[in-house]
Image (cartoon, rainbow, N blue to C red; front, side):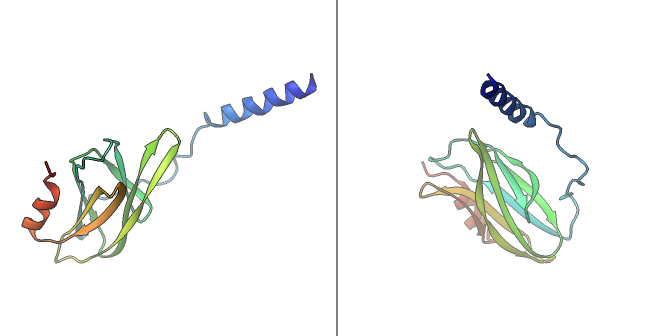
Length: 139
């Protein structure tokens, strides 16, 4: 009888821990102000499952992107890690970030897509013709 009670208490504690209130005293990052612009695009791909992608800048959440959407992020000049993650039934799937060095005189473009069945972030060139070719899905 004691073993059943202990097991029930442990299961109840684990179940209720997931319902605990999360701390919200951390300030939210503001990516609407900054001296440089980074545009992140979720490029459609045949192998994509349509999962919403959450973008991070230097490990801080910046927003969510659906397939085909873009997001403008204003960040301070310097080196930044643009990455992200997707939520799944088993937790978070983290996608390796790409290192981008920004400066006030040029805009940076980052694309997320599936390449060889692997999710990747890549820095794109600033040439608009090259970017349009990368965004247009093959069909």
